[in-house]
Amino acid sequence: MKTLILRTASDILLPVLLLFSVFILFRGHYLPGGGFVGGLIAAIAFVLHAFAYGLKNTRKIIKIHPGFLMPLGLLISFGSAIAPLVAEGLPIMTGLWVPGHFPVIGKIGSALFFDTGVYFVVFGVSLTIIFTISENA
Image 1 (cartoon, rainbow, N blue to C red):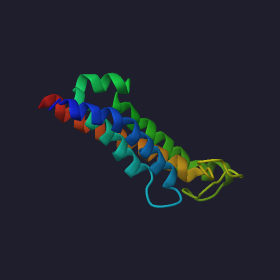
Image 2 (image 1 turned 60 degrees about the vertical axis):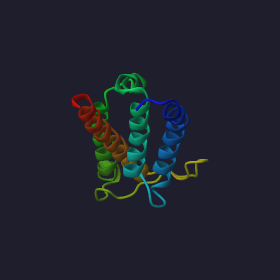
Image 3 (image 1 turned 90 degrees about the vertical axis):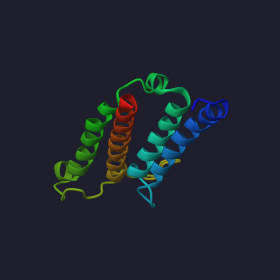
Image 4 (image 1 turned 135 degrees about the vertical axis):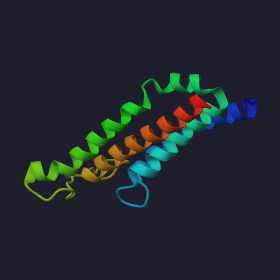
């Protein structure tokens, strides 16, 4: 289904959905949202592009294999989970916060890094599954 309307909508929605997914990621450590939902929204953006332009063209946009993002995300999440134990002898998953307030992002802490790792894992898993199914169809 490669119609002009779908391609035009995909061209507009891809950057909007990616920006929205990053917004949901940053919003997640204060309010509902976070890495899981943000990763799904980012994956949906590329699935829409694959519907409009084909899987080959979508793979050219992503540049790296989505499967690479899974171990990267696990490493980031694991690192943020054990950082309190290593840095200050606190229990695992204790929140650590950088002093100060950063524009747009807010306060930066270990929760944001944990959510970022989850974002990469969910994005990588979702695209790997969908691309694998699409290749075999």
